[in-house]
Length: 459
Image (tube, rainbow, N blue to C red):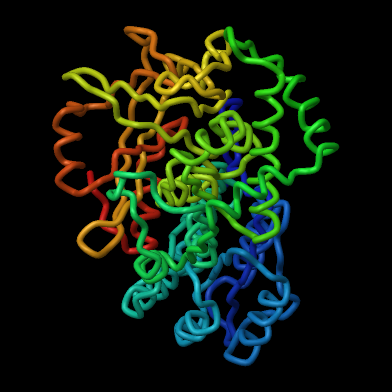
């Protein structure tokens, strides 16, 4: 029952996720007790191989009382995700008890029968099917995994399921910060705090724009000088007219946004970056935003709270922090993505990255760069229309740019889709003008995530 591990296989990244492991046994004799023990031992080893923080109750679950005790131990361990396994069929009456105690998505893992002999050894898949159908009838989200614990494909499937349920649960506890409001005229990006909480569970917290400007200006000089050392170590090329003084102001932006997120326990932040910031402070905050993204922080420009939310979902699904871009133009072959000067270093051609001035008002500091060609990417967006949230995701491939543009820009060829037709679909679904770019192809994962949150998926 083993597979040969190949060099190309990579385990899912579950760093920082504490995974509870609940095994349901049998109170009465039946099925193959030896096979049950073999599978349970192998399953625990498999979970330990993909999770650095697994948690297993000491209590062996066979009935209502032992289940309640085990679930309390999982709650005490502050688990972020829960995997439920029946190596042999347990008591189906325990399913609604789990649903009642674990008020979040979970993973139902089924394992195969013993491969030899003429007797049914486990009925694990049948038991999991019974649990799954009941969870669906209770309107409770879940993910399924099936396979032998020793198989690397099973571990990959299990890790994916854990990521999905973790992200859905985390979103229900998320806090999105909004400095000011959406940028003038961008009323398509206005966020509805009640709809955000009702559909996704996340909270919206407002911060005053002048309060934020005061925070930028009040950053301690010693902290600014220390951060400048980190910026100078990046050795970013500068265009004519950019000086060390411009870097110092962006360090103030960087420190202010980071401290606001830390002090207010904000998971993602959207900032109204114009017209007030360049006019009152004299600088754009785009370098600071790009640096925060490279740190794994989610910060969106132009007050795009739902754009920040989309990036946060990607982060919690293990996709990294996305690059927020305008859909600038398209033809029958490709989309030109562009924004005035925020970018992510790992997505860009290093030799193309230069610090410069905004093309529109000649104020510093923007990051001019090109997206790397030949990268698999997924275009993603979560937004609200007709009173509810929805999501889209589509695969593409970056291509060499056809012309140089000031700002961050790149070309994306969609997979099996005419850009004009996709654009028409998205406009009629009310999607705002920002799309988020994640490296890699993740549409199937995002489709499953939409199911977790019962969001309509726009294909």
